[in-house]
Structures are given as C-alpha cells and as structure tokens.
Length: 625
Image (cartoon, rainbow, N blue to C red; front, side, top):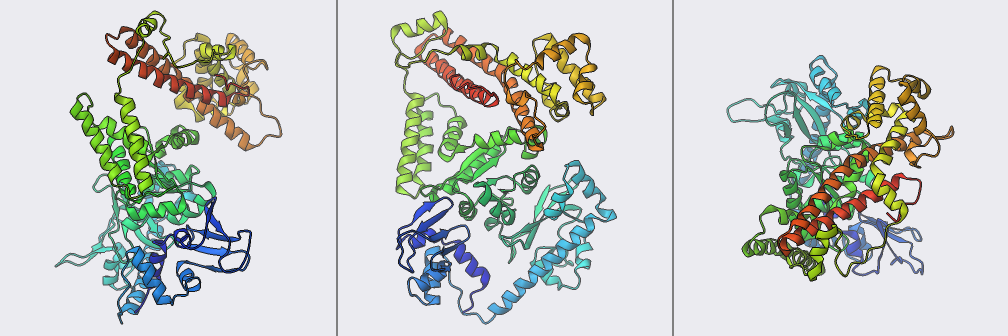
C-alpha cells in the first residue's frame, strides 16, 4: 500500500482539525485560531493552539506539535494506518489499494512538475521576444506594472502549432500530452494547445505551476482557455492565486473571490493581495471549504448583471448544505457592465472598498434575488416565492442554521406582503404636508446643524471639493472623469471648476500659487474666499502640514473621491424622495399608499447613510444628522 504525499495532503485538507480535536478537548475561538489547555501535559492556562488554515496544532508549553494524523496516533494511540483509515472514512476518501506501480506513478507526477516548469520558462522567454510584442502591447494597454507582470509570471504562446513541442522536445511527447500542453487527435501528430495567447500560470498552494490559462490576443474564441484536468490539475479543487492570497488573508482577515484571474491580477495591482478566482466553473464545494480555511465569511464579488447575480446564487446553492455556525458567504455585486479593473482604475480604491463594505449576507442575497426574479402580483406568484425560499432552506444541513434561515425568510415575506394598517387621518395628514409618520414612530427633532447640512449640504460639499483642488492641483487629473460629469447649479462654482480643469490640462505641474494667479480676477477672489480658514471644516480640504507624509496626501485623495461620489448622489436621492412623496400624496387606496410610503422610508434610510458618510469627511461631529 502506497500513500503518496499528494493523497495525504488531500486527506489533511478535508479534515477540519479543530472539529477533530474538539471532540475530546474543550476548545475556544481565539481570533483566527482555537485555544485549549494542552491534553499532553497538565496546565491551567491554555497554551495549546489549533490552526485550521495551516492544518496543525502546537503547544507553547510542552512543544507538542502535529497534524490530524499525528493527533490520532499520539492522542488516540492509533497506529499510522489505522489513523489514516479512520480519517479517510470520515472524509469520504478511499485508501489506495496496494499497487506496485504507485511509486512509478509518483515519479511520473514529479516529472510533470518539471514539464510545467519548463513550459513556464518558455512562455516567459517568448513574452520578451520579438514575437511577444503584441502581448507586451496588450499588457501596456491594461496598465500592468512590470512588478505585477513578473510576480504573476505572464508569458506568451507563439501562434505556432509546434513551437512549445519543439522547445520541450527533450521531454517525452506523451508526457506533454498528459500535462495538457499538447492536444492529441487520432491520426494526427500532437500539437500545441495554446497558440497566440497571453499565458498566465496557475499554481498550487505550494507555488508550483500545475496548469495555464491563456487569453487570446485579438479576435477569436474562446476568449480564455484553461488547461484540461490533468494528474496535477483539478479545476474544481483549485483556486487561482491561492498561494499568494492565503498568507495575505492572514493579514487582512478576509478573502475576496472574483470571476476570473485577470480580475485577481488587477486587484492585486490596486492593493488587494487577498483575491482568488475559480477557474472557468461555478464555485465548488471543495473550493468553499478551501475559502473557509482562510476566512469564515469570504466575499464573492461578481458582476452586477443578471449572470453575475445567478453566479452568486449558484455559489449559495453549493454552500447551503455545508453551512456551519460562524461560517457563511457574503456576496457583493459590481455595477452592471463594470469589472474590478474598471472601478479601481477610474474611481479609485475607495470606490471598491465601498462595494466590499456593502456585501450582503447569504440569506439577504437569496431573498433579494428571488424577490426580483418573478412578478409577485397574484397569490400564486407569491406562493411561488415562498416555495423557492423553502427549497433553499431544505438543503441546509445544520439544524440550527436551517431553522434560523426559515425564520428570517418568513419575517421578510410577512413584512413584504402584510397589509399596512393606517389610522383614518394618516393619509390625509400626509397629503396635507408630506411629512406623515406612523403613529408609533417617534422622531427626534433635528438640530440646527442638521437642518443647515440638509438644506445646503451639496453647496457646502462642492465648495470643499473646490477648496481641495485649489490646495492640491495634482488631484484634478486623477479625478478628471468624475469632475467633468458634475452637475453644478451656481455659475461661479461651475466656472471655477471649468477653469481649474482647463488650466490643469495645459500645464499639469503648476504649484498652488501659480495656479491662483492664472484665474481671472472674479474667480481669483472667489478662490481666495474658499481658502479662508473659517470655511466648513472638511478634513480633506485642509492644508497638510510640513510634517505630513505621502500617506496623508493619499488619504486626502481618497476622501476627495468619496466627496465627489456623495455630491453626485445627493440630487438622485432628492429626486427619488420627491417622486415617492408625490405618489403617496396621489395614492387612491391603502395599497398604493403603503408602497409609496415604503419607498419614502427606504430612501430616507439611504439619505441617513449619505449623511453618515458625509459626517465621516467632516472634522466636526455630525452624529445627530
């Protein structure tokens, strides 16, 4: 009987060490690890730690150390093979039968690693050659830094059916076919699988190349081509960038799941090293278990279109039977038609941070998806929604989680369809002044500060934006697209911004003082007025002191981008609230009024969030807004 290192690694990866040890030892959660009093020596203060992600336990008191197999042999007293058999049975794995050819197979597997390493070296060399000019131009167009190109091992496969085969002719052809590098068709000589493509190596957790992804340069299908499954590569059990994201996630406490490897690379360049991606398939059960070893609530970040939402639902369907206390998924949808590269490139890191912060819990994503998937006008359609939600609940394996999901869905369903009850005067009261509130809802009177911000918030915010641009002209070009699309009511605000943009286009290296002198007199006076110390105290529009660092300027740039987004959001919220209030005023029955009033509450909540974000940019306390 031969147990290969790969088989034993798979056995360990399928065993949750904390759950195994927790059967006989009382353990407690401590951050990303678990702690307990050491079972190998007497102690009163816990010094025994369990790390599920790394798959080992360690005692800082007696130095006991090991993995799941070592636990079974040292603590349970089992022999090695008995320990392996018991763990394999629980993990659903078959222990390999005696096979005299096992050693030879392992030797062949090791040789395949050599093949993949040689192929990677060939592709990298070709990227730097004359033939790779087209691929280098593509990377330049994508604004890929050389550090990222090197770190992720970009290469190029020449548009030739035999280039790789010839370069690796010192390996047996059958081995190149087995590695997925050549295609073998009956009656024809094997030929290169990847041709005329930008090549991206796919690595295992140990950083070894096990497969490739190739992006076509120019027209053609498929746009992306991955290696087939091989003895080294199982796409359903592999996550792209796992070797880099796993250690990074220990620092960030999270892991982000994107749709493809180009998304992962773009985000890594933008400062998100904790990203992974499935490889051409929906997220599988095995990949979910791998994600949970890095984070208890991974964030799935998919496109905001219907296909992206469905991808999130498919992942949810795979996760529901596996859910356990403290472990779930969060789902964050990007704006329709945009990928992560678009967002971080055009709007900056703060915009993507905001998207991540709005990730929905798994139950909320399923509710919103199913609620929007079909009409809900008839009893039959509403019953269909209830049935679809119940179908999700029935797949959950954990009893407590299943019951809690059922309760959460019932509460949402009842809140959506229960008929609103109103006192007779309430609708009439709303029609009279547009400020109707439920009779049991108590509203705290707004402060003078809140009234001022509510009435003049947009003007105040725009003045702070202009002040920031006057102080830091270099930020104009970084926010050019957002600034060009602003809708401004006050003429001198608009003229000043136009002048700033025009002059920045002509001479980007102007310092502050020179920048002011080129403004026409009326605008120059307005600019000087904005720079006075008694203007509203926004942190990002203040002067940085001589001791401040580059990080301080970066923070100002991030806050400025957030301020511009808030300024653009305010008119939309006001318009939506005005429309909802109009519909409530014109409602002919309680159902129409209830729907309109529900919209006013929803928009009011959004405006409260707007004010909270606005307060975050101010140096004064606006907690009462």
